[in-house]
Amino acid sequence: MRISVFGCGYLGAVHAACMVKLGHEVVGIDVIEAQVTALAEGRAPFHEPGLPELLEEALATGRLRFSTDAAEAAGAEVHFVCVGTPQKRGENAADLRYVQAAVDDLIPHLSPGDVVVGKSTVPVGTAENIAARLWKDAPEVTLLWNPEFLREGHAVDDTLRPDRFVYGVQAGEADARAVARLDEVYAVALADGTPKLVTDLATAQLVKVAANSFLATKISFINAMAELCEATGADVTQLADAIGLDDRIGRRFLDAGLGFGGGCLPKDIRAFMARAGELGADQALSFLREVDAINMRRRVRMVDLAREELGGSIVQRRIAVLGAAFKPHSDDVRDSPALSVAAQMQLQGASVTVTDPWAVPNARKKWPDLTFVDNVEDALRGAELVLVGTEWPEYVALDPEKVSRLVKDRRIIDGRNCLDPTAWRDAGWTYRALGRP
Ligand code: UDX
Image 1 (cartoon, rainbow, N blue to C red):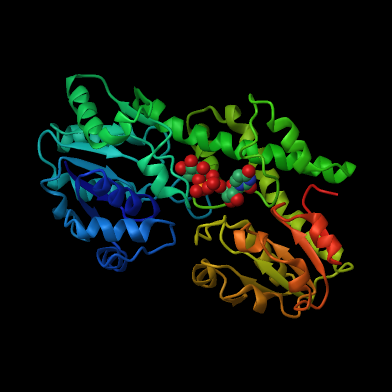
Image 2 (image 1 turned 180 degrees about the vertical axis):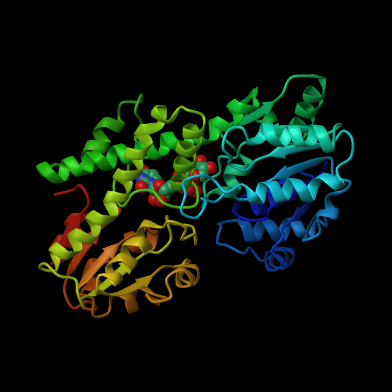
């Protein structure tokens, strides 16, 4: 199958390479020239485990190319829209300008019988608007909405072996043909038994934001329990283990700590609330305001805890922050809790040094005034307080004895509840964590 992929960011670049792995011929289109050049040379413009190898393999087949020219999409039978939908500046709503631009760029190159597949996370109603647009400008083209659930850091695996496929369709014969086409695209995974749910367009768009809202709610629930644990001296990690053993609840996504960040959960719940407001259903999602507020409170708590640990003031105190990415195995710093805490402490007068195995270049672009170093040793040297903001395996594996000689004072705050408190305390450290005594 010949495929075009509009948008070669975290979602589109991985999708394009994975589609080649599934046997298809793919052109990835993006407006950013540097991104296209890097991908065409086999360089992933962001850190995603497995992507460089996959790109190399896909380019070697001769069935993958990248371009800034939308006309290259002509001749493809299935066109995926994978562009970003960031939060609008100063508003909660999603910015749909990239989706609109991609559709504008694509329309002149469509042929009768083509299928346009929306994968971007959009406010419900967007797909219907695109369908209406196609109806007018490309009447023999069918739109399906096929949300993507991949997690950064696991994107390749999540794309090749998803939990489920959701196809949002309108009703009619053309849709049945389009569904059959998309089935061909995903034939390998479907043959492996991946469940497929065919829904209307509105449901398909809602599935994605509902799933992300549920995940965000689960994290904020456990972080609210962490607040209670802090008030009572209880241990939130034990609490999570205990409630997680009830398989109606489940242990996953119950890791308390600095909370959620990244390019999806925070902006998706905000855009969902904004859209619900437009639909006159804002009350239904008022709980998400609380989910967001609990999440942001964790960052404030971390700074307060740092101040408390340093005897009431962080001004001019040397603080090492381990982690800048919003989560491990990613170099994405969008709405990163670790980086936001580091920046806040710096703004309040602390002398902060941040390290991260992959995210330093992105973090530096965002907060040029912070001090960044490339390795843990340099970050720890002379620190009066160490703060773990991202649970990279190398930070979890730190030997508290060995690193003791680097720091000025042995104080650590585990913002991700990822360290063994006993090991750190036994090595003479004052260990503090969010939601643990
Ligand atoms: C998320 C969804 O998981 C994915 O299905 C969707 O397609 C995109 O949004 P992603 O943003 O890549 O994926 O990361 P995810 O693994 O969900 O983590 C999001 C944030 O929540 C991270 O900052 C992570 O540190 C935090 N988190 C996650 C917790 O604080 N506690 C947890 O128990 C789990």
